[in-house]
Image (tube, rainbow, N blue to C red; front, top):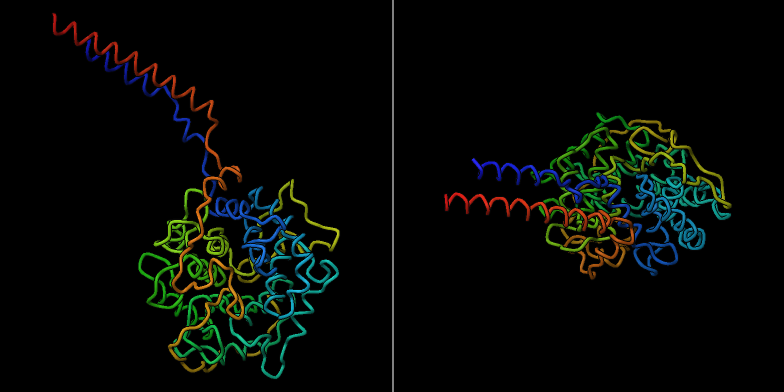
Amino acid sequence: MRLARAGAVAAALSIAVPPLASARAEPPPAASAATWVAGRQAADGGFFGASQPADATAEAVAALATVAAPAAQRAIGRALEHLRRAGPARASRPAYAGRIVMGLVAARQNPRAFGGVDYVARIEAGYNAAAGSYETGVYADALAILGLLAAGRPVPSNAVTYLRANQCSDGGFAHDPGCVPRAETDTTSMVLCALAGMGAPPGDLIVSRAREWLRAARVDGGGWPHFPGGRVNANSTGLAVSALECVGERDEASRRALQSLQTASGGIRYDAGGSDANEYATVQAIPALAGSGYPVRVAPATATQTAGSSTGSPASSPASSPGSAGSHRGSLSGSLSGASGSSGSDRGSPPGSLPGGTRPAEESDKSDKSDSSASRESSRAAAAGEAGPHPAALALGTAFAAAAAAFAGARIAAALRRRRTG
């Protein structure tokens, strides 16, 4: 009886200690990833390193804008200063200008008058009416169209003719015209969002075939490789999940696949074979984790977030900001259905995350590369405010638990001695 009583006392004392380490709620995956990215911002306000172009920073801004994490919102303000300085020189191509426009609109800035530059005009100036294209590459062309959609500008119907002519026979889209080298996830995803934003209904042939191609390229259990049959990676999975959001579908299994690549610091690994988080993989995963298509749907403004700047008025309010399919759709006339392009060769090509094959240094070969940069996760987590419970609270809880265990142990030992001698 005494032994049972002692055990009951020990059990009671053990549950009296609150689990301090789990008392702090973990942030949602998108917010945690955005906080990690914000912690890696360069001193000049850019992302991916000082040598990377301004439109890459604009893509990071658009991703950060999908969450309301304070660190992310502060990073956006610093990134805008970087874009004000570096954006004009970089926006020499419609694709680059398109990415900058998407970032500016997501940050509630006016892309027609930011730092004295009209970035929308730079996209429109590159339009080739005879070809129906803004760029020489299909992925790059989609970026230019998405920039116009973000700004609420109409897109000529002939732009769809160009996309339709370059649809591969299997329904997907390749990085370059003529289905070269072959259909891949990244370009198919961005074109699908562009088509949805231009008003193409989900049942239209060009849309339905691209959507079915994405579904077929998805691996069992969720996630996408760059090319069908390859290794699942976070960049392609993030873009594909966002593309399905653009056509009104949510792929929870693939969102979970992205979360499985998230490190304790919040960053996302490029693939399951990597150990360190990758900046660009994380940037392209954030909109998908936040449930956003392209152009991104921004998070509601917070009380501490400033919408305007000295360089231009906000482009939109949260209610009218770009996001899922249907928002900021440009005018479009004519049928979207038609014959697809020819199947391409099987040679390799630059992955489609940046126009013309230009990629952040960590991601120069997305088709078979995981992040090899040195791990700085613990210091970044601390800098971004991801520390756990206060050390004093942990020490107090530990000391109390130790005292309780010692007291219970003494009672149990005494009961055993009495039982042996009794």
